[in-house]
Image 1 (tube, one colour):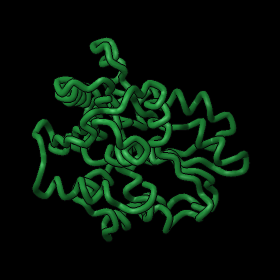
Image 2 (cartoon, rainbow, N blue to C red):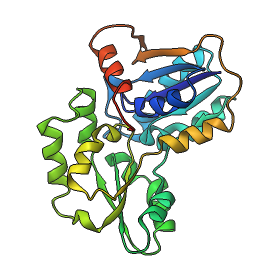
Image 3 (cartoon, rainbow, N blue to C red):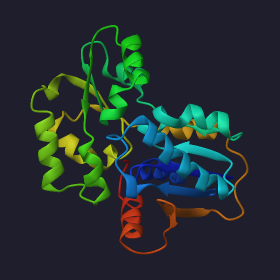
Length: 253
């Protein structure tokens, strides 16, 4: 099966890694719109335009399913794309219900995402509907995207940013954390320096795999991964090296 994934940049590789780990006998096409990252600080209209351009490139490759491996792009563009194309469009949204269940009744839930994601009615209404115990907090971490695109996963700058962003909360009160941007799992070790070790992290990659598995067809005759960066085929160079670095990171992202 030919599977297309797109993200505002390198974050969606955390989803691709999950899919490849379980289904490496398929043909993947990955579109990183790194030239236009981050999406989370842009208008919904511009995000929709950029997402449609990325998806058009993947469709031209003959993909049979599109995965929008970006919470922000899903909120802005997924519904419109589903009316435009007759192939499945799988999006990603913060897994609020799973996070509440994981936290339990006596712990809080922290939703981290980009500014645009956390201000959209889709997410706000979801939190309002599910957060009956008023245990969900939200913090925007859009700045992490730029650090990820630069490959600065364990650098002093993102570490200082997270300490600043979380300075006003008590980490010990949280039972689960939603990494509501696909770039954020790349910084999970930095989160683990701040929050207790029993905190459960939810990033949506496994749920995305489960949704794909519902429609997965026969393996491809030419399994592998093709990479595009903002429309350009990438087979070498600094960005290709960063892609390989992320793909080959040890452990679960």
